[in-house]
Length: 67
Image (cartoon, rainbow, N blue to C red; front, side, top):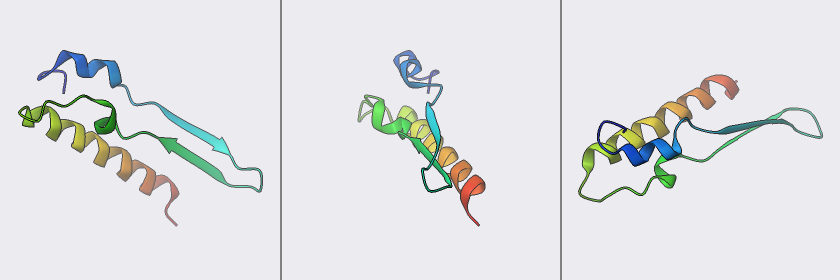
């Protein structure tokens, strides 16, 4: 994303919150990077990079928490 739009650097690295739930278990919270980045509809490279980062985070969550 940074190669295409340096202002995207305001939203990476991705912030996550990992908390213990009161009844046991864990909660993993994050905001998809693509929802934070003001993506110019004509800049398909930034949009694609942001969506790829979304997918990587989703895969990480799946790998950590799926049984």
